[in-house]
Length: 171
Image (cartoon, rainbow, N blue to C red; front, side, top):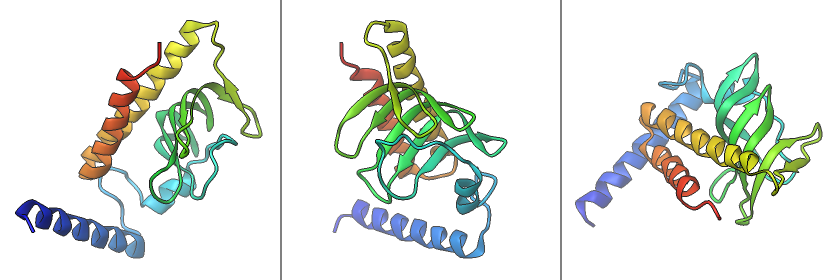
């Protein structure tokens, strides 16, 4: 086994042990200000109906207990996740991209009260531009937050998504 493989395995084991300790003790996560479980429970967000799966989690900022600003809504326990990259106002997704675990991508300009997706109108380029810009900004923000917390793997994952969003927009 190469030295880099050993180092990766050790880092992974250490990360798992740290996560278990945090879960058991309920101690704050560095850079987050509260435990992961409390952060997930305290920040509500309407999950788009198309994003099926367990454990939806808003990876972004909260205001008054609701998701707010740009970020990522992740649904699922492990990859492939269903992801919403974009802007949320008062817990309601406004503009961005939904990437389903199946590989389907949707540009959205909001969701209704039941989570029904309101797709962007192909006739309004500014609407599409805003969806893609908010999606990239959300992925970059989450990548920076994970990097600041020392989670290099998740930081790289979301930085890769930001790069994909910025460079692979269809014409």
